Image: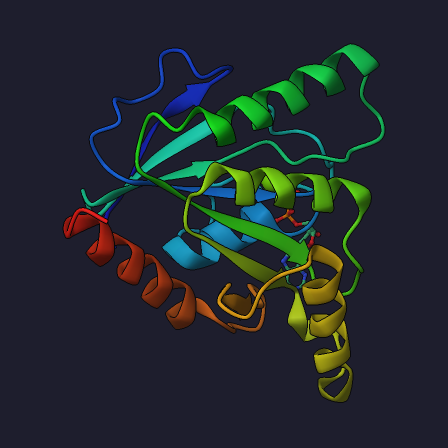
Length: 197
Ligand SMILES: Nc1nc2c(ncn2[C@@H]2O[C@H](COP(=O)(O)OP(=O)(O)O)[C@@H](O)[C@H]2O)c(=O)[nH]1
Ligand SMILES: [Mg+2]
């Protein structure tokens, strides 16, 4: 896999031109987004992982195999930020998701151990509203006992009100679960967009 970092952007202005489809990675801070991106790309330090949530405040763009853009969005739901900043982030997510000036798809990440939060549900609403193809990704499944997984998955599915046609992808960046499924879904979306869908 060939990966190139294209830059970090504080806002929608100045982003790479919408020539290629882009895949946005979105999730609550600490849900495992940076780890999942690094796992997917098989690059340790591509997206910054950190124990300090709320660190990534920019839209980070990567070019993958000269075929699509991967966008690492700031994590939401981190408590220790100012009201003003929180408002700015929410504005940014909403505009990013609803702008619709480019072909895009969304991977909405949720930590598989927790039921969806109010924020998760709000974001899920915007994702649906955007009309973009999306998949829900349950992260850190290695932290769940096997016999409990199905209950946690169900909690996420019903909590977000997902319909049966929404791909639901269980993953673990640390135990190598779900990478092929993620890549297949991305490939499916790219193939569909090649055909003008
Ligand atoms: N056990 C386990 N821990 C994970 C996994 N993915 C991320 N983590 C841990 O969860 C914390 C947050 O991960 P990070 O990728 O920085 O989350 P982000 O804030 O959403 O980007 C870190 O301590 C990671 O090591 C996983 O698949 N399994
Ligand atoms: Mg991160």
